[in-house]
Every structure is written in structure tokens, then in C-alpha cells.
Length: 155
Image (cartoon, rainbow, N blue to C red; front, side):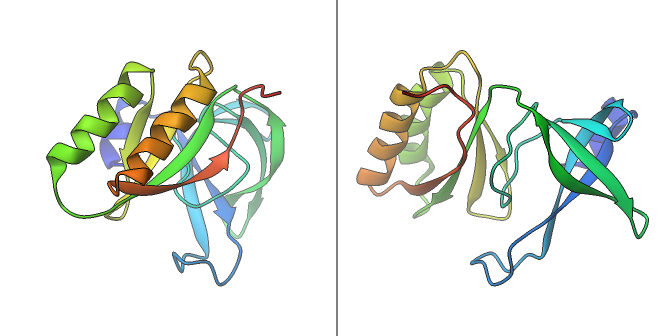
């Protein structure tokens, strides 16, 4: 996230997530913006690029360690799902053609370290259709994707 995010909402804090060692990205931690909502409780204000099992708008429990707020566990779910897209190639037109139906379905994304995108799927989106659209982009060679967390009811 950019510094502007905090300037637009000075009440946000950063919550640090400890990541599994040896992952492809090489990062030991990831920080997400969050709004304090109670004693030790924080509502996430963006989507993770690397952490698994959490999504935008989830409320998490965090404790202070070494001057940082560190994620301990999820307290409640916001109903969002998170997918990560790793773009292939450099043709923005192909990305736009495959992204547009996802955007129309209510999805949004944040740009991370190129060529990585964190995709937020809001609660009202049809998760089966979103997954089908993500798979279509992968099948066309526009991106590869992974699920970070499914917060939608599936059955």
C-alpha cells in the first residue's frame, strides 16, 4: 500500500504476519493495514500478497512484539476471498480482456511486487464464476493464480 492510504485514514495501523520460511517469494513477513476495532482486535483494510488464511475485512487478533503488532489469529471473517495472480508476459491488452469480467463480478486488485496482484473477491460475488474466470485467464496463458483464502460459503 502507498503512504496515501494512511494519510486518507490516519486511524490505520500495520499488522505484521509471520510467513512460512522457504516460500517462493522469499519474504519473512508481510504487513497489512488495519483499523483498530477493540482491545487487540483489528479489521484488515487490504488484501494479503503472501499470507494464507486471511482476507480483506477479516478481524484479527494481534499482540505487540518488539514494537510491532503481530498477527495471532483470525477473530471473525468479513466474507471476502483472496486470490493471487502472477502475470505472464507483458501484453496489457490480454490482461484487460481477462480482467474485465472479474471486475464486472465485483473483484478488485492491489498491485504488489511485479508481476503480482492480490485479488479481493467481495462477499456478494459468485465465487464459482470468479474461480472459472481466474482459470480462464490461466488457461489462456495470461496469468497463473492461487487461492490465499476462501471466505465464501461453498458446498
